[in-house]
Amino acid sequence: MDAATVRFIDGARLRGALSPSGAVDALHTALLSGLDPEKDSPRTRVELPSGQFLQMPSAFDGAVGTKLLTITPENASRNAPVIQGLYVLFGGPNNEPRAVLDGIELTNLRTSAVSAFGARLLVESDGMRIVVFGTGVQAWEHVRTFDDVFTISEVAVVGRNPEAAASLAARAQRELGLAARAADAGAAAQADVIICCTAAREPLFDSGLVSSNTVVIAVGSHEPSAREVDEALMGRSAVVVESCDSALREAGDVIQAVQLGAMADPPDLITLTDLVTGRRSRREGVPAVFKTTGMPWEDLAVARAVAAADLGQPVRITK
Image 1: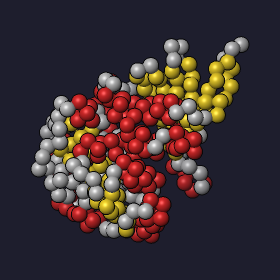
Image 2 (image 1 turned 30 degrees about the horizontal axis):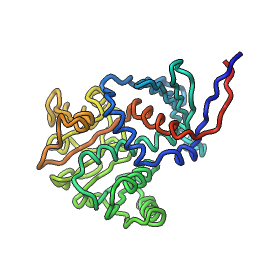
Image 3 (image 1 turned 30 degrees about the vertical axis):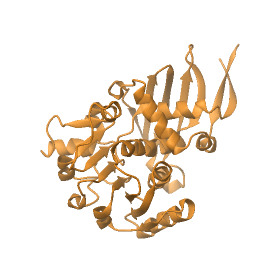
């Protein structure tokens, strides 16, 4: 029997292989190469007695991969991760298994990189003031990634738990050297970029606070019944999405704004591809909302960039 050597890339090796700015570049390169997110495979979901099993497959430019995740809410009370998973990367003329990556670290890196990618296409200047809603893993990942990609003048952290918000701000000061503080939702009025990384199902802040030059990034959900920003903001903003199909299927912020009559049906959505290719640009004089849901092609683009760094421990798999 022959055997294929598959590299295992754990979380630490993944982080060492690719910086946040490198992940942003990998996403940009994928779209420049002609990848069409509208043709990407939708995520599949299997309901389990204790949670969900998700699969996110994609293929482009000679690479094939899928992310496999379990979501087990009860794990929070067991001191175990709620989300666990792996990414399996295939490639070459024979579509051979090439690498297995830590799925959670890949997701953490990819999610914040997508947000920074959108911001890089929309934000007019560096020296930005950022307001982050949320105090969990993704809130930290977004602060870390934006610090790697942009010059940040201030970070304000807003959370339901003031102590958690203060702790995240202190970490940003200590580890990144940023001017950071805990704040309330009113900080949105001074923000250049507002990043929403929460499990909220209803709007997080008064959208009347958002100025015409602000970019709002809504990351937290991929369910039609959940949203982080209200319909008034969606209706007066230039709305950017990863793909129209995925947004109309999964983005509650978009879906509910259409249902409530704040956006046209079908809505006028700008895609990342529109911005990258120059087909469209951000409308002047209005806020921009970048609503993400997370797509399989993004995982594949970042996983392929990680694997190209040739890091990982070989695992012998017998065929």
